[in-house]
Image 1 (cartoon, rainbow, N blue to C red):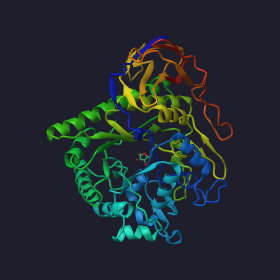
Image 2: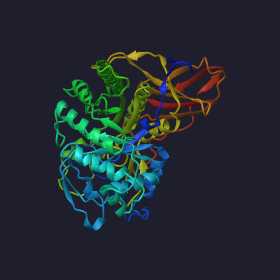
Image 3: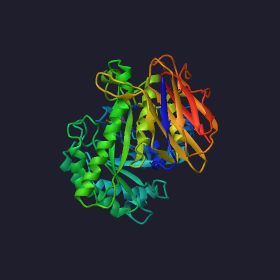
Image 4: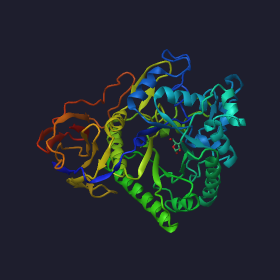
Length: 498
Ligand code: AHR
């Protein structure tokens, strides 16, 4: 099979905001307890943070991590997680039906972010709480000193403000499962009033309003239009969440799901622009795709989970090779709208639907999805270029005109490099990809990295952590401005050129 990609350095989609390679830590399952934080673990530092996990997080270079939820945040009292640990209360956690010990809270998270080399994206509780709690939390985190909450922070040992710039106004408030679920009008009003006082405390912060929990929500896209109607002046971003699964074992359809993600992004941009037009607005609302991933492997085990445990193994999807391919396609979807998707969070980071897994008292390893996320996060910087793709296509029962080739090129002028990300969706045939980089002059191949496996269901485990792992043996070769490469069947490819 043959396919062609044409790019030109003048045909720029937009500058890539590094925050699209963000991730997410929720107080859920073993993400915090037994994940990033496990005092007594052989690798734990003096604060109880697992160094083996920190090393993998640093390897991913994830620039921003959303916290503390997720559904968790809609019932959370942040005050429970600050101050002397001995005095902190255990609480019933209603979103995931567990016991929250509160031995880890926002100050511990801020300390962990510093060690991980990342920044926090903090969510406020607009489920059971509202503007008052939200403004107090901003004051606690960001106000220098001389007020009740900033002095309280200092008394908890954090003299310098945490200076958290990005704040989510609640989580999935459109979802009936959410604690304190609201109609779009109810949420829009609450979000607006919270946003006002949060920005009065710290005018430098940026705010994300809740968009729809998935493309499938019945209230989409009316939800976005109504919420932005209330909040347009006060917020900079609207959120999108989307998870995919392959429950019926239909891999061609599963790998085509990123086309639905393209549609979701496109529709949210259209809705933002509609509200802007109606308001005669000056600014564009940007997109924060702050939950995205594959999630379905663990659903059955979670249904059988005993409630009211501390840090049970919830949402522990074991990812296979085809999941990594779809994650690669989803990353390309976001790069294709780099002009408007300015933040995103792979949900989540450790143990809970995550690229990094740990065993309690044991090791840490990379799941299959770690690799496309790593490659994009490390090499996907600069400007995203319009991808003119010519590819054979296929139809599935529900999605038609699916190109076998999913691809985008990124131009990093500072490093003098072009990186092509490409997925061959074909389960049967290798693809010869010819890339035409006509405006770049003669090219040289730095590396052609390939993630391939004969078995779509192959996984990495603690015992066999390297079953699915990239190699640098791709055959990309340059001839002037033309680059020819074989993309093995069902593979993710990164072709780096200078
Ligand atoms: O990431 C897992 C959960 O998925 C989050 O808590 C929630 O926001 C979403 O439904």
